[in-house]
Structure formats: structure tokens, C-alpha cells
Length: 223
Image (cartoon, rainbow, N blue to C red):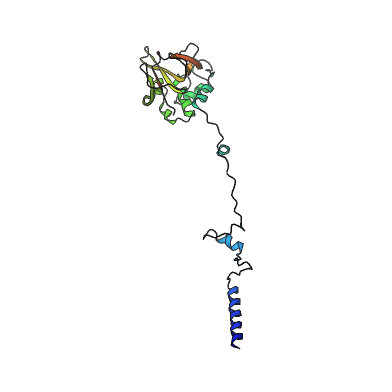
């Protein structure tokens, strides 16, 4: 009789436990969990997930070249793209010329060789060029001189900036880009506000040849 009473008590306790929300176990012994309950509490406490029965989505890695596939536009690409720009009426005007001048806070009618240099440097992301103003002498980067006083301190590169000194002005009066060395005496340049004769008051952006011996300085703004 005592054994029968003990059996009834055990059955009664088990029933109450299951009614109180204690998880039941299946044949394999794995705990059966209500998926809705897990979803509600995943933000509150860590939840152990059976990764065999609950697959986790892992996207395929994307090659870096597919993510960043934008070719960089170099300083050389920028200033050579302006070769052929001409003033509208020969008076330091025109859409592109006036855009160059705007970079130094000037309007049409002003010399724009320095404005051309500054615009190209800024378009190449060289923010240090913000200190260039409308004067050609401001294009000389004194912290990174490559050539001055007929002395080379390094090999000039495409994108370096040259300046020319004019005795009649008693100052630097023209500037542009050193594009490439032709030989030990001559280099090719790309410059604004010049012409076929190489004037400092020309009508457009030209590719020219300049003498190292006649150049006041060559300095570097780019990395």
C-alpha cells in the first residue's frame, strides 16, 4: 500500500512541474524550446543556439576590388585635361578661366596662372594648396624645394610646380606645372595664362618647353 501511495505522489509532482513551464525532453534528450520565446529574449541575454539544427547565414566575402573599384584621378590627369582651354575674349575670361579665378577669390579680368595651379592641386585633394592666392609667388612651396638657384636638390616629378622670376617686375611673375624632363637643360610644362610664345599674359592652357636655367624654382605640393 505504501508503494502505491508513493507512486501516486510522484505522478502528481511530475504533472505540476510540467504545468509550471519546466521544459519537456524528447526521445533524444534534447530540450524543446519555443522559438518565439527565444526571439523575444535574444536582446536581453545570450542564447545558446544549436548550430546544427539552426543554420547561421554567413555571406560570401566580397573581393576588395569589387567594393572599391573607382580609379584614382591623379594630379597629372587633372592638369593635362585642361590643355586646350582658351579665354573667351582674350581678357582673362571664359567659363573655365573664371572658375580657376574663383579658387583664389578673384573674378574675370585678372591673371590666372596661379589660380590654374591652385584649382588643379585642390581637385587632386591637396588641401595644403588652399594657402595659394592669386599671386604666382604663392605657388612656391618653400618647405619642399626641388630646384632653386640653379641647384637641384632632387629629381623633378610630373606635378611639381615651377615659378619664373621677371627682372622687370622684381618678383616671381608666372607659374605652372613641371610635366616631364626632356633633357638636362629643358623640361616640358603645362601652364595657364600663357600662349604659343610662352608669355605670362597669354590666352589659355598650353603644353610648353621651358629651360631649367631660366626657371626660378621648382617645388612639390603632392605626396
